[in-house]
Image 1 (cartoon, rainbow, N blue to C red):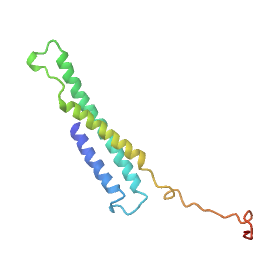
Image 2 (image 1 turned 60 degrees about the vertical axis):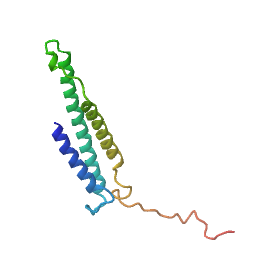
Image 3 (image 1 turned 90 degrees about the vertical axis):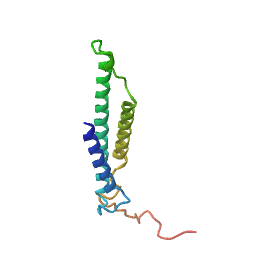
Image 4 (image 1 turned 135 degrees about the horizontal axis):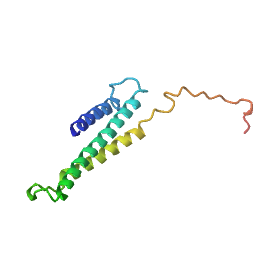
Length: 129
């Protein structure tokens, strides 16, 4: 599950690089926010996968530690890798959430063009000083 998380993270980062504003990989400016949204969803999913796999490993470690039938030499404690994994998962969730929140289409780009008409009936015909 962690390997799938790493591959999904790489795919998400590549999609983020392709859809970024400073790259010219995609010429259409309307598609770039959608690609960034896909990258955000990929990072969210990879963060969930990482937290799930690390929590599963932590659960097995704590279960084996609290098992009275387990031998003393087989008991393990939570190491720093578990906490680094949880922190990495939280950072991936944060990055994916921020990408999903801020990768919205630009106003006026996909919603058509706004037309403004001047109302000449309300404006005076002469300029008074």
